[in-house]
Image 1 (cartoon, rainbow, N blue to C red):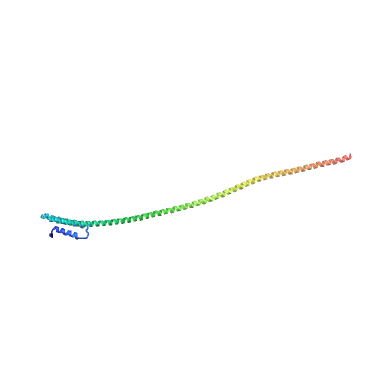
Image 2: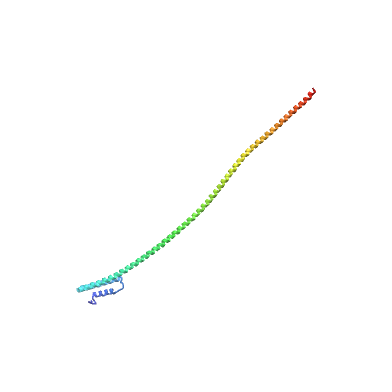
Length: 230
């Protein structure tokens, strides 16, 4: 049954059909505007019916049908909006995951850069420590060479000391031998002197004996002529 042109229900039906036939997705603001307009039309219709006291069951049925149609349309809009929100949520999740991955990559790069910086600093410390060790090794080698030279000099001094001790012992031995030789020479001289004195004594004795013999012989010769004279 066709409603009058100036009927509020006809206006609501036309608006509902416009909303229902529109296949383009509606936004929440457009849906709210439609709801406000529907509420305004319903309020106007209700006020007119109360003024004329012409509310019939058919009007209630039409109102319920239009309300049901409106609600189904609204439900479709809400489903579409929910789907759009879910898609947007998925996109946001994907963007969040992508951002997390980028943040993780940035953090990994920053961590790698920090680790690289720390490694460079550690390498620099190790290089400096290696230089210090090289200097220490060089110093220790110099000390070792010095101690080796000192040890060699000490060994040479020990050999020279032993050689000097041997020479000193030989000198002392030679001095003792010289003393003994001098003593022996003194004894030999003494013996020579004694031998010479003994020879001189013997010679003197011989001379004395010869003199005595000559004296006796002269006495005998002197006595011989005297005896002959007698």
